[in-house]
Picture 1 (spheres, rainbow, N blue to C red):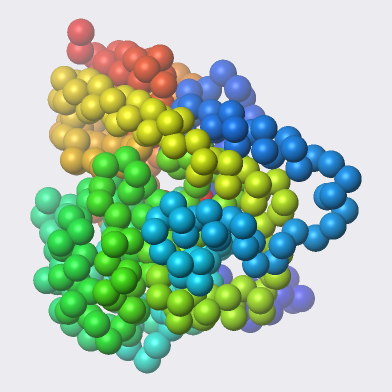
Picture 2 (cartoon, rainbow, N blue to C red):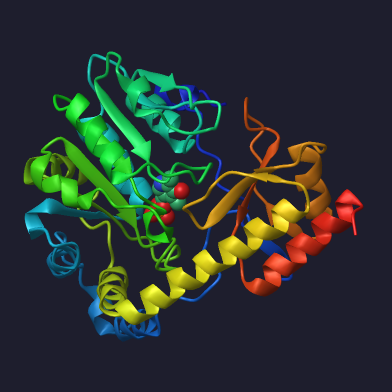
Length: 354
Ligand SMILES: *Cc1c(COP(=O)(O)O)cnc(C)c1O
């Protein structure tokens, strides 16, 4: 608290990121990073940018990267926006597209950054409850809305909607912007990008942080009608003209060019997730059906906070949210096979089962 702070700053309730501990021997399963490294070709491209040209500003429009993303996703470059991680892309979308007279709708259990942006930008919102199965029901969004944002798969549940359900949502709300946050889509959900051509109100946001193992590089992007992209660009150029440095632009392009690495890496995470699922079910956990690189699970006989604390004592870190409806759950990132085995062994020990 300071007399020097703006009124806005006093009223903010910032997002609290998952802990980034210093201890390297920890099994870190709390922030949905990839257990595998980035594409070697991306690393090589990033290293290639560590030269004298770093004294020059990068391309403010990231034209080469936007062209590469357009070609990868079969859209036009004017339909692509890039930013410093998808959190920044989302922030610009909140300012550019999601502030209207009627409230912004998003699920009651979802990415906890959304209410934070709402407070920052002064956006009224209405949280739409998930159903009993912790799933989003598109029909529940038939209420007054200035705009809608939904992660697909949802976070932290991992549960996905089908593309047909997203299409229904878009048809029912053709007059307002709808943002689909696809941070985890590559792990088993259907992307809504093919719907962009027929839905000028749709903005799809993706990131290279999770499925491309580049969380440290900070590259996110949005795909939508050129008119929506122009709105994001106006906000970006009122905030920071150069959000992506030269290494980030080069590394992101090289990652897109290494399709073999990408496919192999996401297949391996999906395989790990199924192993983790089976192990947790064997220990008596209820596990929500996940299409992401994490699972959301609870044990009928043990409190989430207690389990997370016990794991932490054993140097295994998972994410626990002390929030209504989900305080019994643990969100566990899919790690390497070795990390999964370690987690399951510690849990088995904590639960006192063989
Ligand atoms: C991780 C995540 C993001 C942001 O990722 P960036 O690293 O900023 O690209 C956005 N939305 C959801 C739902 C996420 O889980």
